[in-house]
Length: 260
Figure (cartoon, helix red, strand yellow):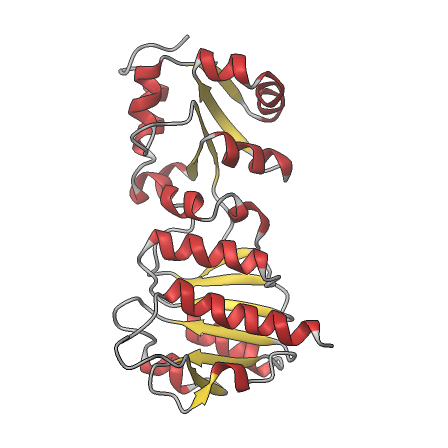
């Protein structure tokens, strides 16, 4: 059992709280029973796994599965688990895993979400969760967005992080233009647009552009959209959370596609 908070592995895992160390080590954290199970269900490659003795006793089947998939597994004290966790009350198990490749190919069909400079991990996790629920083909995020594997993103996705093709795009405008040239209609969400989002033909292959929580979409991106759409709001409401806005469009696309 690992009990020392000064252990080298413990120190390395704790460093994964930061973006810099995730970049350096090429690893990220998966925390809690639910996320670990989702990772195992899709065969996601695990590296190191640490759990408390109580968690192991309560989850023997999952523990055996985890041990068969990872490079190293060990029992740790509650003090060690508390140190390496990003939550106040960790669920009993934490794993490190290999980061996703930025070269994942997302088919240019169906519905794709493209996010520019999204900063809130809760918003990104919500969009991931809703994208899976509504049957989206995949997700692109600009390089200046919050990390895809930020621990809060994984938690907010409720495990759906492992079920959606996602990639970080270095030049989002260029990639959007390429999708457009391949026959994808590009739809930008803008507060002052004249077209309402439900008036778009979502049965066509579509790319939804959503912008930063405060600044919205950059002019460069919104200008190349085939359609600029708004979401109607009562006068007292200035705007919607980007996760809510994305959800509305995803489900309108699902509704229209179900009529085919």
